[in-house]
Length: 190
Image (tube, rainbow, N blue to C red; front, side):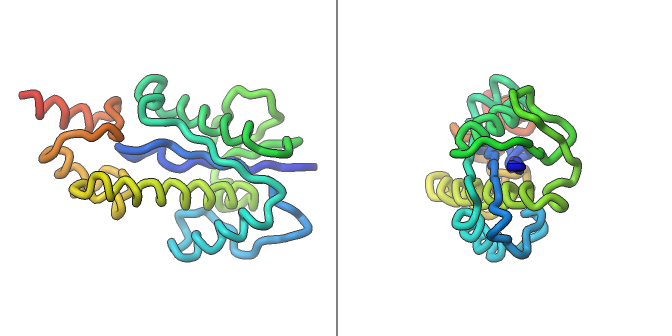
């Protein structure tokens, strides 16, 4: 049975896309050390991401952009990113295991697993691939918008990020439907 693990990263940040990954691991090529991406060091995540991409039967990334997040809400945008990740797989799975308590309404046999990113190897692999990809995007965006500190906080609403929003306003990559960004935009209009 081919199992695809699916996880997303970037639901909580105030900026940037939400990125999902789908991974079908090769049982003949096990990967040691898979875990929830948040429980791994950045260096370990990056090494594992390379190994996952090399050894998996197939993997794919899907994303929903800031405009989509603002238009359809973060949960629906997350489901859209998951759908795109699954559609990008070269081999279709028999079962999809998703980290969390909700599954998108798609034509797959699916199972939601709370804490699956720490307990299901396929979901752990997806968690790692998605986090490494999104973190790299935010580091690249940091070069475009250095005053916001994206390389450090990856778009999350840290004190430094909120202060930069108040001082410099929102960029095109900020999620205008998120309250702290709306608040900063409203303050800038006064």
